[in-house]
Image (tube, rainbow, N blue to C red):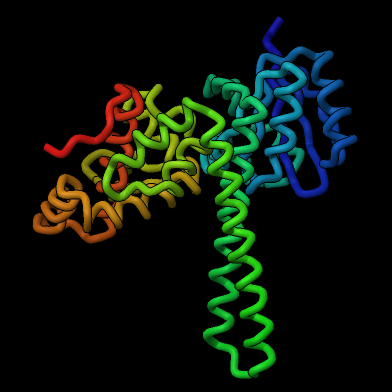
Amino acid sequence: MDAIVVGIDISKDRLDVHVAPVGEAFQESNDQAGIARLADRLGKLAPQLVALEATGGYETLVAATLQAAGLRVAVVNPAQVRSFANALGKRAKTDPIDAAVLARFAMAAAIKPMAPADAQSRLLADLVARRRQIVDMINAEKARLSRALNREVKKSLKRLIAALERELESLDGDLDKQIRASPAWRVKENLLASVPGIGKTIARTLIAELPELGRLDRRQIAALAGLAPWTRQSGQWRGKSFIGGGRTTVRAALFMGAMVAARHNPTLKAFRDKLVAQGKPKMVALIATARKLLTILNAIIRDNKPWQTA
């Protein structure tokens, strides 16, 4: 009997489920009760893999609940699934169709399940994500303050910014407690922060959202972060290389680290300046610097050795 693979298309309110190769399809509500029913139903099917698409956070609770139920879960890149659908000639796009394509993609691509996250790791990831949300809100309110003309509106904005900054300080305290509570995380943070350009925020983002760091080779880790170059070519034609997919928040953190490192890290500054001197566009040089930074960080965690200036 062929192995069972499940594809789940996730929206804010609904879960569309497709079971391959039997072709069974059904829906559940995307809430605690619906996810619990789904876990129970899939547990009886004992699928080889359950594939979910990354959908801006809506998949997090589903993935965690299914993993807790003992199911093998993989969260896949939507761009890859869309390309697979195009290759199949599936131009129509509905949630049930997407679920079926997900299941077929997981079977064809031999997707591996992600490692289950323990409660402490999930808490760290949630705190890092919440910190990012608070920073975004502060920046948005500061932008509104810069455009505000009314004095009362300005006072309101300043009060809210002050409250958000207090909450940010509180979150940083919670993150400090989580890092101090885990000797392994403390060591990782110190190793990552030993690299000029990597501060606590970037280090904690990588610990929380790229746990594979140090366990994969440089090409695999670059692909996870969405920094692996993809080349387009056919016959004599050569298109430009580009990056995409991967974990957006990790890539954004590495871009920030690369911008700082290009000024303050002698090794990466020389690397970036050499590319620019060769005529590479500045954005291409930044992407290459971020990729080299990730390679360095991966080696540092793998070898358990801090940064050393050459």
